Length: 266
Image (cartoon, rainbow, N blue to C red):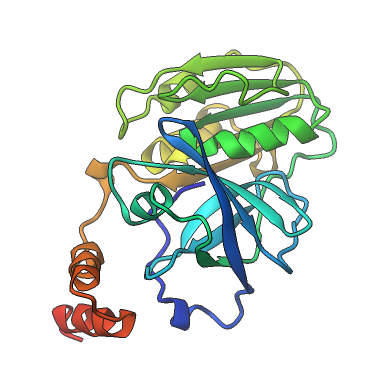
């Protein structure tokens, strides 16, 4: 999971109710042009056992918590498959020399919960959903169909998925998954529909499931992992240029925060 929907959070101001774990990056391995695998040591972090669980990550010197799906978590080894872009705070950090860096990880959460009577499973998502879909297909015994909208060749990534329809997105910041879902030929009987991707697409799909298919809320889980550029609401003050300028000038994090607060009029 990679989301821009969650609020900006200063590390020192993170909720005291949120579990936090010190972690260290052990390795960084490219999977495809837009997907990067980070393996971290995260002592004390425990899995929820939920197949689509996610954690928050605060990279060194950054102000924001970013949320990523857990590809795997065994003992203290946490694997995150991170979607990278042309630019961005996490992209700049993760695509650089980040091995050995210390980060903060928040406790795992998840939502995948098929009803006991489900006889089939349908999974739909874009590149940000691939880690969750891969993990779900590894752990479910239900007959499963997958629709994956990705810009890269990920042959072998969904090794445990028997029936996958690969789709190409219109562009890096667009998706047509709502249209795809509306055209799906649904199996007979009761099942479970899980989907994640761009927020506007997810809203359209929720309406389709509720109004057209009239599914009970227990029969689906649809999550917005990110927002398209056109749909993003501009901040009063964007912290990224201030962070970049401050780091370039050799300022401490507290000095950069002071500059950000001053720019906001705080």
